[in-house]
Image (tube, rainbow, N blue to C red; front, side):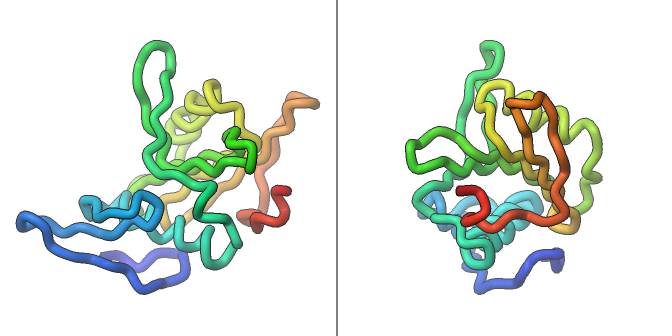
Amino acid sequence: MLSLNLPAFNVKIATQNQKRVIFDALRGRYVALTPEEWVRQHFVNFLLKHKGYPQMLMANEVQINLNGTKKRCDTVLYRRDLTAQMVVEYKAPDIEINQTVFDQITRYNMVLKVEYLIVSNGMQHYCCHIDYANNQYSFLKNIPDYKELL
């Protein structure tokens, strides 16, 4: 698989039913190895091992109900009271991060109302902080460490 703009780690890849799979630490099982999943597993590892995010407060493929349709958020970080704090949307490395991608994660946020939105294709990463009190948002230069979110 493609080298990403994320720290390398000891990826667990296997073959099941003649298909390549990758171990998802958050779901505790192997899932289909797609380019987007490759990005997800690297980014989750980055958040856990390099940014100090607690594994027990993170979940992959979180289902939400948006205007009567079921959608899935790629990764959600929860606060200790189990309200959503951050949503991360992944794209394959060859997918450009553009307004359409931000529109997608913004629609998810209409339901979750999180403080942080992150979009990554494994090569480029964007983090947006939403200030609801002042009705504004700002893009951060870096992905915040978990301790900065508290």
